[in-house]
Image (cartoon, rainbow, N blue to C red):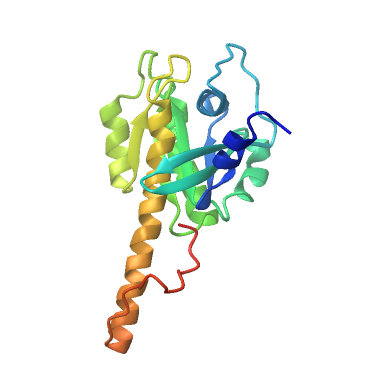
Length: 212
């Protein structure tokens, strides 16, 4: 038995599991971002993702212990049919572009079409500008304006310099958990309206079968 079995058991406990998909053009730094977050590593060598890969990370969102299952997808056109099959069931999507590559930013519209066509209606999307330590071809103001137009959050980060990496994943986990909480509140209000009764949960009440 591992000497760290108590730590491993504590980490394995979680209130809910969240599937987060990372999408964006090839070369924008999705894999580097994931490795920096999951393993605190950065590799100077560029390795193209073939198909799909994923890593798991635990984090606390308020009083909730969340297990993040983060899927890193290939950005090349020939892998798009594989990627789109993974949209279903994702609670969150990190849509990545390279701040120094205008083409990858212009592709956001195409990726949003894919999300609208294949992802769940309530999926949480955050638009992420990678490699923020580099010279910008796309200003932060331009990216924020686009994100705001679609009602999404925008963040910039750097896997190389470890800038804002953790906040990106914390932000999407927080938005997902908050959405679930709002969904619970909405369902309880509908029940109140239908019955005319106060159905506030008691200590002995059976909890709703929600992930969070």
